[in-house]
Image 1 (cartoon, rainbow, N blue to C red):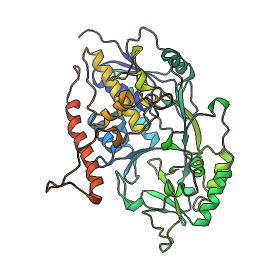
Image 2: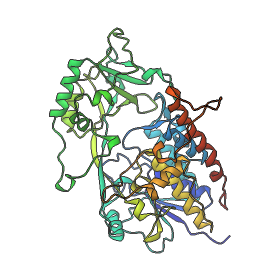
Image 3: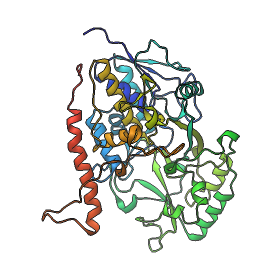
Image 4: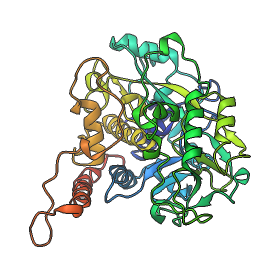
Length: 465
């Protein structure tokens, strides 16, 4: 085989790291360009590849009844570096797959550094890539550098789309008062690496909840710049104070819901609301406040969050924050293989394409890497079936969305609504499943079909594999 030119991946986040791994697995050389630590961002804390800047959770690992769990299954089936590193660094989190963020990042970086086909270049790519880079994957994430973002905007003629994403605080475990808090997962659910007692729970009575709510609503918030004033939030990652503004019961039916939990310190009294903290590192020394993304100023966070029972003396390893994300109008700009229609040598991957979530970003990285590797080897890899989680997600960003004008395409997590409908599930007697059994049967029908249909796609081997 003649010498293969390297594929260039711009961005060493989850999508870029996964893309590079898939390319190297196909026997094709790849250069990963990551500007950190030479140039930082508003949200990253380190220069490590695949750094998790928000939660440390990959969400549900249930591949029978959840779309994200099915996506986990498909990534594992595809030899994903992100899932391999996540599984090796998991921490207890009930039914979710959560990871030690530092161990996870280090595992991803070590694997790529050890691969002879991977080169890591720690310099920024400012503007469009050089013309002699024949194949490029732009996986710069929601924090794309201003110079590159402007170049892409000029190339496409599209207005920049953006939304705000918020970060939750992290607390030192030894500062939590366990005489008031307790360990328990909702409904005692046991997940990967878990015991059914994987979350720390801080209870509130009605008076405490209302005082807390008032403090959040009245607390001093981060100011917006003029150009940010009309930027929306991503609905799945709303700041806690934005949820509070929607109604006094919103939080009690959201991240502070008290269901499935019993306070062992006072078992006869049902909490009015419960704040949960999830383990953030393998040592169990850090816990993040679940659903507590916030734009409150740091001083206000410390003051208000220490009014939570059990967190009176909390020591915060990191306070919450706010950062601005950018993404493409992908259904208009990208083809079915993630290439930019006006410049096909450029592919895009990750959150910049309009998917939301760590695993969704890694999934698009896997697809972009495989598409690019096949092209480099003189092959064409067809997109995965839309009945799979990978195919459903790809379909949404490259053609499944109905254009309803500017701003109608918004970031989305994987969900069964993106899959083609399944037939009404039937029981062993051939009759339609009805009642409470219908919903879980329907979800199982989606995931069973996806597992069957994705096998053929992963069975397609690239020439150098």
